[in-house]
Image (cartoon, rainbow, N blue to C red; front, side, top):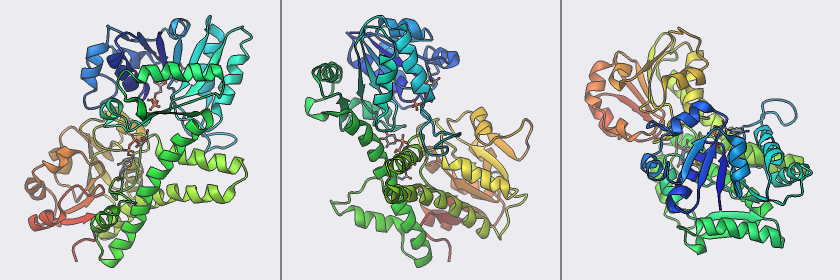
Amino acid sequence: MKICCIGAGYVGGPTMAMIAKQCPDIPVTVVDINQARIDAWNSDKLPVFEPGLDEVVKEARGRNLFFSTEVDEAIREADMIFMSVNTPTKTYGVGAGRAADLKYVELCARRIAEVAESDKIVVEKSTLPVRTAESIRRILAGSGKNLNFQVISNPEFLAEGTAVEDLTAPDRVLIGGEESAEGDKAVQALVDVYAHWVPRERILTTNVWSSELSKLTANAFLAQRISSINAISALCEVTGANVDEVAHAIGRDSRIGPKFLRSSVGFGGSCFQKDILNLVYLCEHFGLPEVAKYWEQVVAMNEHQKRRFVDRMVSTLFNTVSGKKIAILGFAFKKDTNDTRESPAISVCRDLLEEQANLAVYDPKVEPATIRHDLALAEGDERVDICTDPYVAIRGAHAVAILTEWDSFKALDWERIYREMLKPAFVFDGRNILNLSDLRKIGFEAYGIGKGGER
Ligand code: UDX
Ligand code: ADP
């Protein structure tokens, strides 16, 4: 058995590294068309920052884990091919702004059809709209070769920042296959891979459509919890209730549970928004406009929360931030990742720039070039200073906004920060990680989502 994975991104890289680590008997080759990315996977500085990932890659790389740009060769040699390419939201044509753009998936399928010389099991790893397997199957069948291609779905449930943990001990692994003898055989081949380290009762098998739809549904439910608590945070701010206390109280109901109830400046990441919009598009496509509207509201609430955060900053800073220096701590969409896709920091910064603020941005892991790209900054744009030291970012600032919950921000010397800022000094904690009453004791005017401010 030989595995190949097309796409060496945040999902393909860590997932294949874990399979290779746990299955030393299976050669795993990860291919990508992006030479720089492959070079990085072969170097000491991996393109993806994840706690614990360096060790996993070091253990398996060169033994049975390989990174390469030789896509065709890897396809030809593999028995099982994972598709882990990007599926961004479509920006053009039918379904623009909502439907998933499947061009990379389709290109991948066409490549497999063209170069394969033996039977293949093709595994959908990227999150895809329900019924994509059907299109992949037709493309593969169109090769005209007398080969058996089985398409199975194995969605990834890892969260960035905890990828290694999630892959080591997953709550469940989901595998969906065609309901036929060949389908069962393909599913079993993948079950055998995961069974190297995942207890059998945690490996769930379903039909392909259930598997594809479960991934979208899981993300929609998780995001819905955040939008629900964020909606309540707005009500807390005007009533004197404290959103942390409310979240804690409702989370103690075992039917609700405590996880994923942290109110915040909004959810980000490559999955939630994209997957919900995808679900919305599917509902509309299948003639279910009310269902579509229901889920669309989860995204609308998220947009509202980000905008509300900026509005509150501006109104607190005496209704103008024009020409003021605002320090932005954190740019990644969550802690322990260098990924900024759909990060709330992007829209908060853009809105503040729109209000003519000057920004000093610090993030411990995000590359300055990424920040510049995300904010669409022209060369030499002086409104945004990207700092490598948080104390430089805050020096002389009117306000600080915390947009990622990095643990290192809790450990900063906040008394020193207060001394070096303009007075009155404001902290807006979009992630609710700091103790606001301690900050107020130092002298800050401190605001957290759903926590009111100094009265
Ligand atoms: C998510 C799913 O958790 C994962 O199972 C799926 O496979 C991919 O999508 P990810 O996007 O990597 O993973 O991160 P996640 O931990 O889910 O966080 C998403 C966003 O929600 C982040 O911006 C995070 O800060 C925010 N969040 C999370 C909150 O605002 N409050 C919470 O209580 C939890
Ligand atoms: P994810 O978070 O889903 O892993 P990424 O964007 O991080 O998404 O990774 C997807 C990777 O897939 C990118 O590195 C991209 O270069 C790669 N890719 C896209 N299309 C192809 C293709 N046809 N062949 C090989 N690699 C591809």
